[in-house]
Image (tube, rainbow, N blue to C red):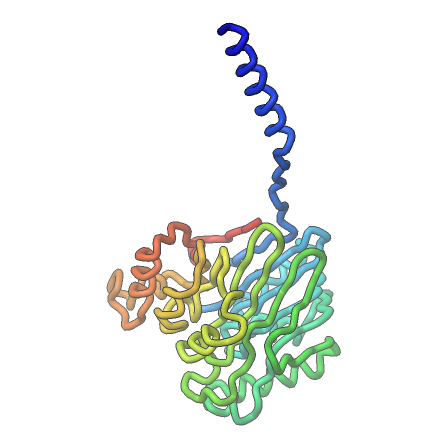
Length: 297
């Protein structure tokens, strides 16, 4: 009896050792880039993100309003005063104002390449109040001497070191309702550790088009930039359909709190509805630009 028990124990020990020998080591992917959501400098709408790869390449997304140019200059100077790639989601002044100021007077800041999806005169003329500003901005791009690439179709991948940027959406010349916002360039950014989706000011119509595009699965991400500063942007259906874990809000305090100067939720904006929706989805992390500088690794 004792011998039988001993045999069982020995066999069990051998099985455990054998099993342990077949266990594979699981390595946790290391991030290959970090990104900063820059804080609002004058408590107005804007959109500004700066990336740095593990080998020191710098990427900017939009840059914010013209009054934020000094802050952006200083931030980029601290990273070496060189931008390898600059993405423009669309040419509204709150997205390209700071870049326009830099193009007028670079002051030593070197920009290697700019990517955008250039609006036709018909499209940028659809918002008369913005037309002149866009014409001046496009003229600055042409005179800058910087390599500028006009992305006409989605699907392009730009790889910097181990970080990938994929264009999932470009201008939509046929969407003349909310024309500028519905022509935001949509960009997915990822490495082996995390993924991000940047929507610019994507409107409801463009967001629905994205859901029905060949890139549907690539909309799922870890970090989602909330469209149009978090209100009247992508559809609620879009937010309910796409899977994400963390919200990036490029929002001033009065937009985030829907405050018309009389307190919380006294404005006509839809931000609180979107915040409630995000809460209902179980999202716990929200990075809001008016609250300060956020760095994500």
